[in-house]
Length: 464
Ligand code: AMP
Image (cartoon, rainbow, N blue to C red; front, side, top):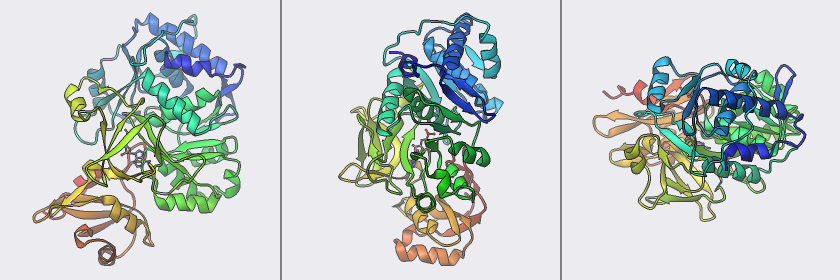
């Protein structure tokens, strides 16, 4: 089945119902969206976009950009979203690698043009394995890889999330995420579409607009920085949040302090889930049942998750939403799957006997100091608790004696020697940082992930 058939089969019977509630007070109905999709699909056919061809899009977040995405699915082509922050040189790499037949830089203009075309009625039937989208990983080391997601991958994940998070047509989703990443593009849009529910549609996270939007919403999806920004705003009160059914967080680790502060402020517990470009969502805390700070919850229905190499080790997964291969990188694909078909996520974590998963970081962020393994999270958890510290990032940098030395970069203020001494009272001496640096901000990507590769570069000469 074509993913677009699945999504549109759940659009409300009354197509005059809103799909997008815009910040200027206007709305775009499901009927208008469907019509834009059908006419844009006509235009794609006119541009000779064939099934399997790639359609790249680097355009501001808009309803038109969503219509281009859905039209691409409808004609059986492959959607390739590109981060709006990418430079021309970066975009060149993606265009050369993916060879799209069409590169859309202005979705509004394309859809405006399409409105003069007749609607394309037919949606191309697809097999589950047929490619729907290529999502390039953020690629902090080496070349960015294109994760190939099929119609079956995306449909399976969308249906699982819609069910476990209890979405209904009474929901209103606050959507302030970018749509060039799986979180805003697949997780957000698909949950809303499968419910035939409206979205409060915000171009980006803007404090005032989000506070206002919350009054109309029932569910919010965000990255952890959305929640820290909300909490930093005195206008975000228990009353503001009182009618909200669900706050979901993912794409980067949610600090335990954020979870606790959020609960203290609103009386509600953020539901944290874990996912990645190669598999969309993998685990989630329960809707009914305990949501625990620092844990990403349980594998989704149908997801087979295991921890390789000891109690804490690399997380490997198999399941209906796990991608089949990286675009034109057969060797990378082989390297990142086990012989028995599990994808090696690159995340390190552990699993309780009842299945609950805890992530301790990326395998490539593991520090090996004097031959001992140091998991940055162990130290981060201690520092994050200290007064004056709002967040910490622990990295390994080259050291002449130890190979790597542990270094902490901390947002806030404190006494370096006292912090190192504190770590030594709670952890084995080899895990205690050799240096602590204080900063105002940590480098982050668009999804709020701390870019440890940049920190490693910045502090590379510390012990030189
Ligand atoms: P991306 O493919 O850009 O979405 O990045 C996926 C990576 O983000 C995962 O492999 C994890 O390292 C990280 N990630 C996503 N969600 C979480 C979470 N809830 N807690 C910790 N790390 C997360």
